[in-house]
Image (cartoon, rainbow, N blue to C red):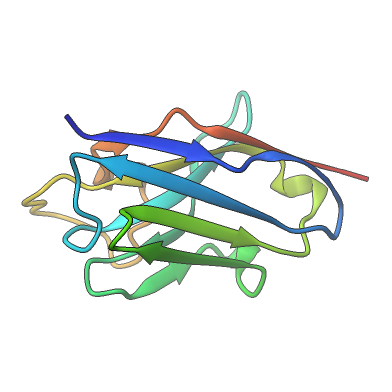
Length: 128
């Protein structure tokens, strides 16, 4: 079975940094696209950053220049490095992986319907 487990969330002051990780089992990171999403209670889940099977990355405008998505294929681990955090970055962060053989995808890979497998989420809180 494919399982994704996020970790690394926590509470940090505005302007601080945090790195999230997502460990996968039953899945090969090098083959398929993966992404980070975030969600605030009562709001729709939003795409934050994605990395495609060829290594190309895309970011939401709100995090460009501050967040970096990367992956360690050997360890099957996805990372999200976050810096200059803002209170509006506060959310539950989820990692996601696409299913094999996706027929239709977006160019940015930041829509949640593109992904089949999801982690349980890790909370990030940025305080002033």
